[in-house]
Figure 1 (tube, rainbow, N blue to C red):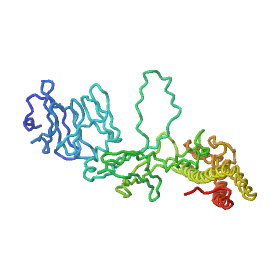
Figure 2: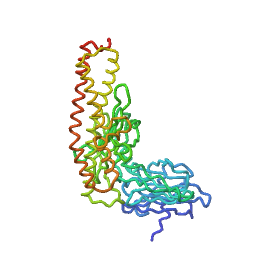
Figure 3: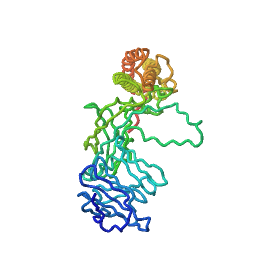
Figure 4: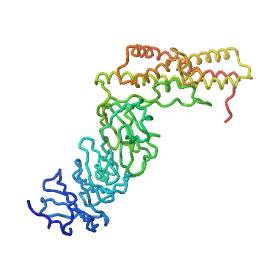
Amino acid sequence: WSNVTASFAGVPKWTYVSDVLPSQHTDGTAYVTFDGHRGGDYGTYVFRTTDFGATATSIVSNLPKGEVARAFAEDPKNADLVYLGTETGLWVSHDRGGQWTRLKANLPTTPIYEIKIHPRDNDLILATHARGIWILDDPSIIQQWAKAEAAGTYAFDPEPATAFNQANDKMKGFEGDMLFLGLNPAPGATLAYRLAADAKQVSWVIRDGTTQLREIAGDDMRGRNTAGLQIAKWDLRVQPLRPLSTPPGGQPAGGGGGGGFGGGGNNGPYVVPGTYRATLRVDGKDIQTVTVTVKGDPDIRITDADRRTWYDAAKGLHDLQMQANGAAEIVQNATAQLRLLEQQTRDATVPADLKRQMDALSTELTRLRTRLGLAGGGGGFGGGNENVRGRIGQLKGAIMGSTAVPTNTQTAQIREVRAALPKVVEDAETAGRKMPGLVRDLIGAGVIFTPAK
């Protein structure tokens, strides 16, 4: 042993050594803190040695007076990043103590007695005095902040994300009034980025190899285009379907996509576990691509092959639902236009052949509305087996709500709806194409008139 006390200049005699931390990155380097508050000394004493204690340099830097040093930690991923716990909170330095920044967020003013970075989960864990344990689930932004500042606009490498299947049978109402449950982290992958300046449009594009699975843009990125740190979330699902558009002069008629009672809704299935590429796009330019690792729910026992079968079935139905929704929009728009024509011609004399065309088109659209779950406007569950779009939504919802491969019955039903849908789509497109000609004929016969310019 060598007595190195004299190396730490300015520390009063008999001051308590509150922490000694050997560097995990550099031999001979260690960080030492002293705490004299028990003797009425509220000075700040923080040092770094690079020669095994023979000499030491104060790294108090811009720390305010009265910040009694209690605990120190070195980041395992970034050798330049160090953490200091004081009597009032946590400080972070990106240059080994050259400059300090106080970490605020929702961390209360409290003494920090110990700092650990979890070796597996990369969580920043603080032992506080009188405030319990405080955990920052994802310090990766702090770990990469120096790179972000140097780059200007920067996408942070995200932590691995898990596609959890939410439990729906956890009844907590009978477990007493002292039950405490912490909030779960927001589900999905965290896509954090720093913008050097305000941008007009910011989006994230998720790819599996060269295949685009998702674009996070529009309303999902509202308010996330200003300079500074921004965070978006990917729910680990493929691109959702957009809601049916509102037909001219009215509201969307009927859901039909299985949005309720176990239906698939507009969401797509979770992607299978693996690695994906997320590209930050700013004002139309690809800025940076990061890798997102997706893990499966550890509580679900399913083989990779079965999970792929499950995904292919759910994704196939999701794609069929998109086709069915497109046909439904054609039919509901044509229906709205036909109703308007019927109102405009109610008191007019319509030639017999045009009246027959209108009646025939009305009958055709009524049949298609049943097949596409638009009849009655009650959510699209009418029509029984004739409602192809409703059956697709219900099948998709049942499979997405399960954690096993589709049953034999479901597989047979998938084949049925896959075979039935093309005819429905073709008929819808044919009916839609009849509408412009009917309007021209009615105008040509002098039954209706175009608005004056």
